[in-house]
Amino acid sequence: MIYGFIGLGNMAGAILRGMHRSGDFAEDTLCGFNRSPGKTQTLRQEIGLKAMESARDVVEASDVVVLGVKPQMLPEVLPDIADLVTPEKLVVTIAAGKSLAFYAEYFGADVPVVRVMPNINARVGAAATAVCGNAAATEAQVARVRAMFQAVGTVYDIPEHQFAAFTAMAGSSGAFVHLYIDALASAGVKAGLSKPLAEALAAQATIGAALLTKESDEHPIALLDQVCSPGGSTIEGVHVLKQLGFESAVQQAAEAVIRKDAVLAGNEAKK
Ligand SMILES: NC(=O)c1ccc[n+]([C@@H]2O[C@H](COP(=O)([O-])OP(=O)(O)OC[C@H]3O[C@@H](n4cnc5c(N)ncnc54)[C@H](OP(=O)(O)O)[C@@H]3O)[C@@H](O)[C@H]2O)c1
Image (cartoon, rainbow, N blue to C red; front, side, top):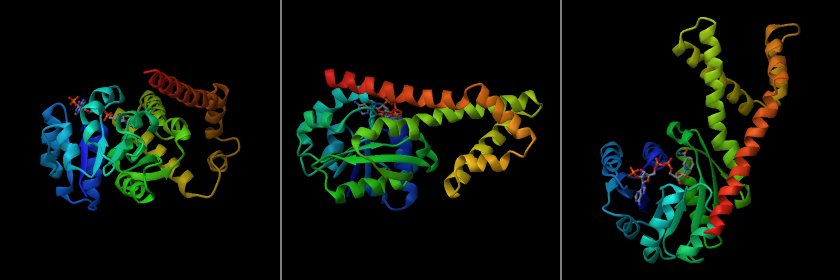
């Protein structure tokens, strides 16, 4: 089974490195092509990726074709490869905001396509990835795609209409967390800690609280209660966050992501 990547940027690079690291995908099963040659050479040296000369060469050589370019590049890439993408191929797309119906316009409805939404936490093996196959994709093909993305984290099967909400929860929220960590670390610096120490502590506290939420059976608010001693200092901080609208700000940010995703999907339908 040959896996071929068109576009070898941040996301595709993270997926390929994860697949290689997992040990489940032999070096000679991974190939790819990128517009600029530097990234291909780096991956060739790092993980033994077979460098291809063009997107068409990738499709010809591969059983599984992974579309790793930005969504706005697809109208250029897809017509170039469409005649080679037969129903015997399996297409995997990681492009944000592009529906399964979009690919059928280029390849026809009988080509199996699996839409995937990973996130950049794939770089550290901690992505949450959504997968959804079109009507032509068999369960075995979807399972093959699950296995690819299990190499970089956890995989969830969701219906296509939930992709926007999934993106807000699992992908865009990472940016919110980075903002929170930076703000917290800045308060630590103000209190006299070095910046590297403050950043490390803010990141570690975030990882720890997230792990506790994930691995304990308790509700997040029950865990919060355990940190807030009566009359103590933590409840003071929690009250300030509530007074300043912390929960509402997070919810409105997530809703804004979902709204914008709908706008982008709407633009796509008009093309
Ligand atoms: N980054 C994320 O967190 C994230 C999360 C979920 C989904 N995604 C999706 O992943 C996809 C890639 O995003 P990214 O962040 O990895 O972007 P990126 O780093 O810009 O990677 C895109 C790559 O595609 C290459 N490329 C452009 N046109 C090409 C062509 N015609 N043929 C071959 N290669 C071409 C670019 O080459 P150059 O070196 O010449 O620029 C670049 O290396 C997008 O569809 C995005 O929606 C990204």
